[in-house]
Length: 273
Image (cartoon, rainbow, N blue to C red; front, side):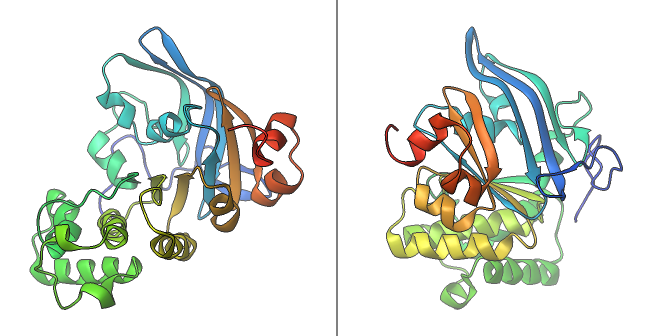
């Protein structure tokens, strides 16, 4: 890890709860409510995110999945009129504490967006960007980080001979893997993915899914997806949201084969959504 977040220490002894089958929890959310002005978008959400696992967030459009995801690295702070109540802890420490360094928080909890958003610069500079922002200047070290990140994103062999070419000339699937490499380069602990495959073709989607399965050994991943089959394929745990409420959260095989709530069963079986 590069750097330590003020007020959010990585190896805190506090509150490393072991639930959901004895897994160590990387993030804990309790009694979370979120308001856009007078409108309440999330209602009393409680969710545990186990370390080095993939948690899929499913539910119909407008149910609060992406809103919830953005609370995990405080991206909602960028929206006027947002108010958050409740607790979100990373390694046992409150990410909404006044002393939290947001730059370091968003380094530790990275984000991959719905549509690929490469910067209008070279492939190399896209991956190196975050490291430079955090003060890295050593060219040899940057070269190593760029190669490691591109290899980790299963992209190195496709771009190693054109690192100085514009990222804007890559295919959509390559651009999304580049964005994942860009996040990985700063060594986050948690990677948030907001429907990372929704704009991609089936082959690119398969590559992203294979990548997610591979990189969870190094990262904890929380992924919003509308694709039920994708959630079943790549996630260890699944959380079902409806109308801003967390209806059910369990191991993925339980959610898809023996859900406890009828609303979950109705959504999984396509009765609505």
